[in-house]
Image (cartoon, rainbow, N blue to C red):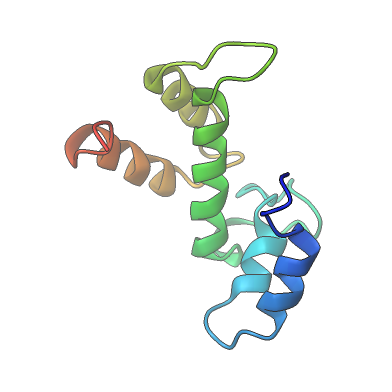
Length: 111
């Protein structure tokens, strides 16, 4: 993190004062799994906010396609396969398929 980037705790504190949307609950649920095996509370399926599911999918997609010090970036197809393998357990299949539809049919790969 650079000096120009705010610390995550400061962001959460600032979001606590914002009156739009379920920002804090979304952040609290991004590690939950649709089968109920997630953390910290273990809600399942539609008990998890759709906003949290979208952020979790986006994070899980960006992580493998981003190069790391210890590995090269993976392809979009490899990242899509990872998401599909986790659909129904970690991720809601509908949310995974929505992202893949955007990538394949709505210009997502190009952008």
